[in-house]
Amino acid sequence: MKKLKFIFIFLILLGCNSNTKTRDGIFLGGQIINPSSRDVTLYQGSNVIDMLDLDDNFKFKRKYDSLTSGIYKLEHLPEYQTVLLEEADSLWIRINATTFDESIVFSGIGATKNNFLIDLYLKQEEEVNFLSSKYSSNQIVFKKIIDSLVLEKKASWIKMDSINDLSPIAQKVTQAAYIYHYASIRERYALLRSSKLTEAKDSLFFSYRKFLNYGDNDLAFFDPYVNYILNYISQKALKVGEQYFSAKETTSFNIRRLEILDKMVSGKLLRNNLARAIAFEEMLNFKNQTEHDLFLQYYATVNNSKQYLSEVLELHQDIRKMNNGKPLPKVLLQNFERKTVNSASLAYGKSTVIYFWSQTQMNQYRNTLNRLNKLKSTYPNIRFIGICIQPFNALTDQVQKMMGLDSNDQFALIDFDKASKAWVLTLLNKSIALNKSGFIVEGFGNFYDIEFEKILKGL
Image (cartoon, rainbow, N blue to C red; front, side):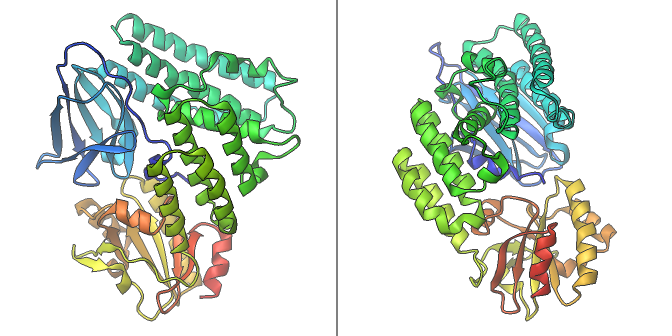
């Protein structure tokens, strides 16, 4: 199941060092086709730089005189994508929100490097299924496959670089986008074969490690780089003979990851961001709640960011509020008449199940409706409420009418950020079960999981 993009709180992008030449500012503008919200947000690191409202033509634009050159994140909820901005760039972005990543096109000064990044990202996404089928290959075959893909992307990069006057930071970021992506896949392969593959006896397979940087603050919040370092740390944290899939579910493993991070990774920005990412992974493993206090004690000794510590502690408290027997935290919703209602009104003396969907992920929505029909026929005494994570629009009205859905059981989030935090909404397959009084029976259900049906039988 695809994770919601808001999980970028783990891996948010950070700007790099500014150029020293005379400042000309940076222009950023664009148009969102079929928008899923009324604004776009520009982030640098964990900080909101600007929130840009869409006009009547769904366009936005702004001239910035004090932005530093580097990596930013442009978000149109619930999606986001990397943008590399540099001094004197004049960049226009066109996005169709219904096919977000696939539709992004950059034009203007600074477009080439950004089009390279998005094209590379899409090619790597297309390779996912192919590579998944190759994880059963032996290490020699797998290494050859990855080496071939790296050489292919390197050739594309050399061609792009040869006809463009890229700055040093643009060269670093565009190269890192493929180098660390494939390094991360190698580490993932090693994790899955943890009982058979070790650096001591398989030095040829792990030879790529000696060419990589483990303390690059310029890339401290760049997804391909962060993902690689996290996989590297996980591989180092495994004990001899320990299986990754069982180990990663334990608090002790995440504490060992922090220990490895503390010993092997340099750079304050990078260390704090990685520690926060590990902390969120631990907090979101809801089965380990009884051990979270122990983890937090160790996390506090590794992290030295007050902001990050506060975020992790707030998540810890939000999770507790979603436990069995607690009242469902109140959020504001939009009903089919476009009126604002309080979530406290969802329970009407009847057991209730809440499921979620997104206008930008219609394949997932169709699968959800198929699952919904089966559950409704099996549990006719339960009310099933669908919640769209974006405000309704004319398109969603048409889709719901076509699907024959009861409009009285359909709502939308008005403020995704606040609601997702209150309900700890990290996956679209999340489901919440409430008893007849509106109290939580299961706050972290999986709408597609057979185990969730055991909860439904008891409602």
